[in-house]
Image (cartoon, rainbow, N blue to C red):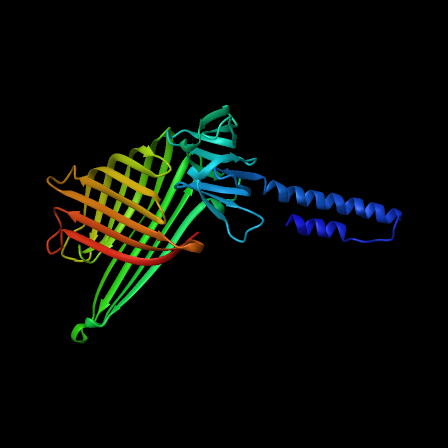
Length: 364
C-alpha cells in the first residue's frame, strides 16, 4: 500500500515552477504522508526469530502457542510458533495474558535478553516477564466483530442399508475481552432411514451460551445456559442453568487445564405426554483439558458431573471429546464425541446417549 501511495504522490505532474504547482504538490505530499503514516502505523510491529529473520507487519493475536502476523509483502498471514520468537516489538495496545493468569493492557517490547519481554502496561508501567510466560495476545482497539472466533463445520453420510441418511452440523463462537470471555456452541444431528418403506427418524440437538468473568489471576466466575434435545432419552428439552467458579490450574503455550464447580437448576420436558415434566437442583464439578502443541492437531476434552441435591440417588454426566486437524486457509476436519449418562432416566428412555460426528469446516 505504501508503494502505491508514493506512486500517487510523485506521478502528479503540473507545469514546472508554477505557484499552483507548488501548492498542489504540497497538498498531495501532505495527503500522501498522512496515508503513508497510517499504513506505517498498521505495519510497525515486528517479530525477530531465533534464526535471525525479522517479520514486519501487524501482530494480530497469539493463541495456543502460535502468533499470527499480517505483512504487506504476503497475501496470507504468517503463523509462527511462539517458542521460535526471540524478540517482539509492538506499538499498538494489546490484551496480554500470562501463564499465571495476570492480565495486562499495553504494548510489548524486547528486554535485555531474548528470554524476556517487556510489557508496558497502561496502569502498572513496565513489567519484565519470561517471554514464554505470555500465553495470549489480542488487539483490544479493533472492532467488536474482529474479536470474535468462529468455527463452522458440516457432515453428511449416506448408507445403502436401510437407505440411511445422516446430517451433522456444528458451530462454535467465542469473544474475549480483558474482563470477560463469552462462548456459544451449537450441534445438531439428524438421521432418517426407511427400512421396509417405514420412515424412522432420530434427532439430537444441543447448544449453549456461557460467560466467564475473570476475577483475579487464573480465577473466574462462570454462568452457563445449556439445552439438549434427544430422541434416545425422550427429551423434548433439557434446560440447564448453572453458576459457579473455576480456575486455570495450568495455562501455558502448550495446554490448559481447568477445574470448576458450582450449582445448577435442571428442567426437563419430555416428548411422551404420559410423562410429567420434572426439575431438580444439582451441584456440579467439571474438568477441561486442551492440548494444542501437537503440530496441526488440537485436542480438547471435558467432563462434568451433576449429583442431584433434590432427587436422591440421581447422577448425570456430560462428556465431550474433540479432535481437530487443521488444513491451510483455515479449513479443518473435526472428530467429535459426546456422551450423556443419567442414572435415573424416565420410564422407557435410555440412561445413556452418545453421538460421534465427523465434520469438515472453516475457522474465522
